[in-house]
Image (cartoon, rainbow, N blue to C red; front, side, top):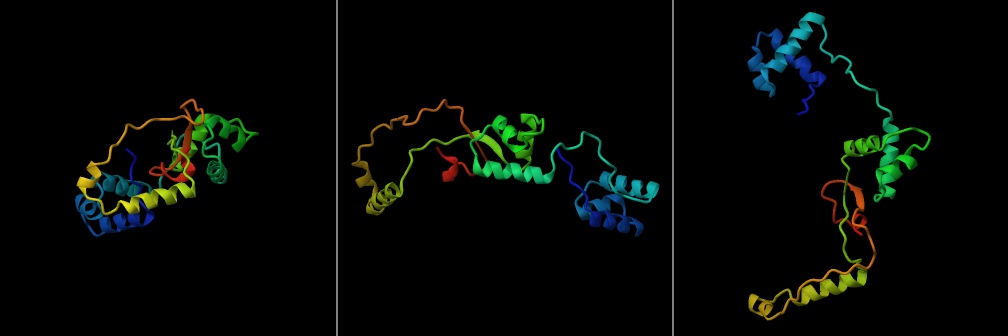
Amino acid sequence: MARRRLSEAIRWQIIGMDATGASFKAIGRQLGYHYTVISRLVRKHRQTGDFKDRPQSGRPRVTSEREDRALLRIIRREPFSTSTVLKRTWLPNRHLSTRTVRNRLKAAGMAARRVIKRPRLTDDHKRRRLAWCLARQRWNLRTWRRIHWSDESRFLLHVTDGRLRVWRHRNTAYTPRNII
């Protein structure tokens, strides 16, 4: 589980409350943090005179924020691209892994999800469907029971292998640009 970062203002507030003699538990209760978080920050401040986070260990990022935004622009243009294709078109002169591409997209809130396949509806189709619904809007249950509903059938008009994915945000499955 990711830790909540203490803002600089909150850190100053904790140090100030500690200086007034408030207990760690009282400070934590008032600010909504566990008392151990408060005690660690105060201890760090007493020992070093500072409360800033130390540099984090780990490998430096391979891409900049500007390059990450460029990847998102590519995804807006071509949402059905695979991570391998994106790797080649995004930064062609760099040696990046497809995992890096997926990590950057995940950090931006995107995920490769199965494409919703629906019949392509023209504006005329939509108008006729709306007219059909409006004509039957006032029907009661007895009238609806006289209708015979046949089983639905599935027809493949365009051949796909079933493994097509679209890069999209959550809850956007039925937006027209994400449907095939």
